[in-house]
Amino acid sequence: MSAIIIAVLVLATASTGALFKPGEWYRGLQRPSWTPPNWAFPLVWSLLYIAIGVSGWLVWQVQGSGIAMGLWLAQLVFNAAWSWLFFGLHRMDLAFVDICLLLLTILAYIAVASTVSPLAALLFAPYAVWVALAAALNRSVWRLNSV
Image: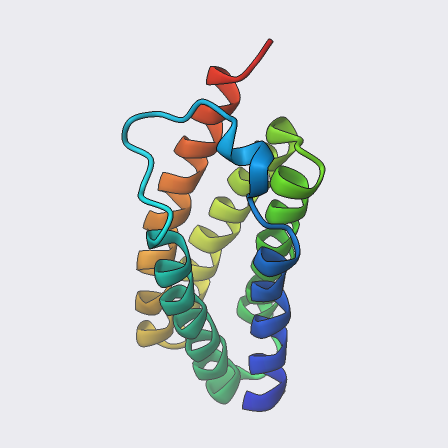
């Protein structure tokens, strides 16, 4: 897998955020007071997607295909699914399950990648923190808006 393929995969995943935007539905939801400002999401995600791509490329350079790259690909799938579930289908419950699976996959990737490339694993640390925050936010919004 070359850097170009990794970049395309990351860009395809990132594009789900553009395909399934928050829109009026999200603006109408109750959100906790600690919700990050709207401008933070594209900024943080842009930086995280760069780190995701570099991390995957580092692991690929050292090991090629293997468990770490399988986990790297799996987290892209969970990542892409979240926007569709939450903003597209308005299924906060399924989105919460998805983001929990995403977080578990990220943590598994960090554990496995740390034996392949410590830098690759380190690049996923901010991603894990942000996704943990996003999972808590997902759960809070779901609870605040349950009928």
